Length: 102
Image 1 (cartoon, one colour):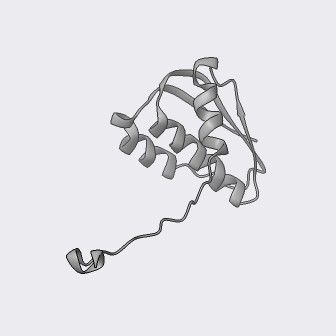
Image 2: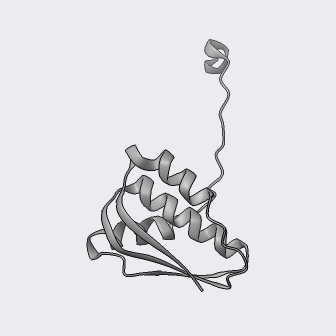
Image 3: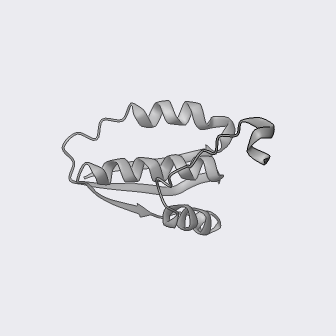
């Protein structure tokens, strides 16, 4: 089992650094991963998204992932983002100016 211990602040201003750190993690052949949030001090939607992206990526590799010890103050944010569709398609509307209004 591999344990990822989240510590400190996971907020937008730290997202690039956190992303690089997460991308560098070698999960190897661990069948189970625990993501431990017990020592999180601050978490915003960008930080929660990084955590959940990591969770989903591991699950896509066939690993069992458990979020554990998430502070209560962050639980609703993580739950809400976790239940949101991961890959909602975006439809682009092309407009050619005034002629589209006719």
